[in-house]
Length: 285
Image (tube, rainbow, N blue to C red; front, side):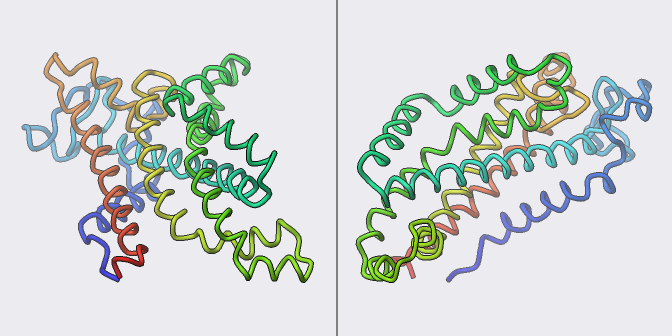
């Protein structure tokens, strides 16, 4: 098995460590308005003539862009990981049940998955997000924004996992070791979790990695459209959205720098996903 791409692996590790350590590494907390100084607004990055105390510049409120990116990476990675975990859990449960039990269970679950696949995942996420926000009290919308976004993105991507798990379960269910487990009286949930599911681990890992990148892009898209967090709780997409208002007035770094961080993060995840796909492919060993 070849080694993972060193640059992508090192950068992703750096992103993860920065996200975890944001409360300690960041110069400012973007949500702490008392720590902001308007006199420090619109300072350019240090490579464009700015100050070393604000290496990536500041925004219109005097927020340190580097600190905002650290906190934004924490939110974007958190949303992506939790949404991917939700998609994986729902999709594997539905797919394994459909493939193992077949008949009515298979027909109902897969037709529902096929129906959802006819719509773009982002459109489904927008619809679910809108319905949930409408159902919630106005005062609770900001407090539940993270959970709503995770659920909206997670519920929009489960059919991909379901179809993969269904195909694998249909194949594995006819093999001798599964038939032997049935003969000794093992229950269907035990067979699915102890015998069939472990054989899907490699494929699930690759698909989950690809889905993680897609989930972060979906979060950034929804944030850019204004359907997520407030400026005081910035994700990378939120930073790009609010920075775009100043793009043509000369403060280009407010959009370009967070956008570059998002692109680099997604690239790292995709590169590792490609590597895992090759590493776990028996034809390439």
